[in-house]
Image (cartoon, rainbow, N blue to C red; front, side):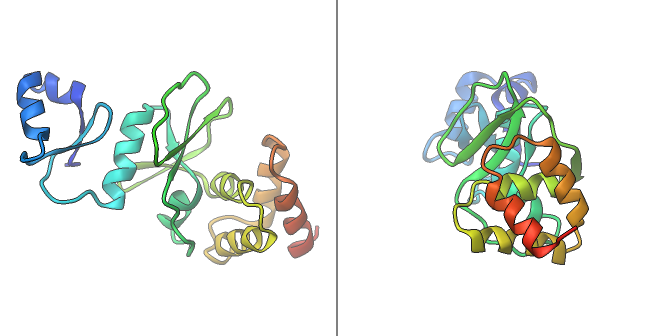
Length: 180
């Protein structure tokens, strides 16, 4: 069972708002990770706990993308401080530590460790298009391809159907590394 719960879930299980506040107080056994999302264990939150909390916060149609989606599936990449999540275009939530990207094109999702992860090509393009360093873009593409999470043709297809915003370096690197 996940140690992440929403306030609504806790209220639905019979806890009162007062009991929840008491459990989340500085001396209590729980901690509120995000507005409306609680870690129901006394130990510090792990990255997995934080990922689950972000999905609870962002809503049921959200999916983790970028570095976390790729490393959870085997790619070797540095983990950024923020968590990159895709959410529906009507989502209005924001919070420090979360890179919430609204999208009209929900990603294909892979379930892993109770997480909804964007498919590899989408996660790679989402991560790479935020880079301004061409070497970093190449490292992202290499890591994804070396882990065999997707193929160059799947990356090309993702670039074809995605927004062109921020993809110039990604397109250039893909053409240079893996010419068609």
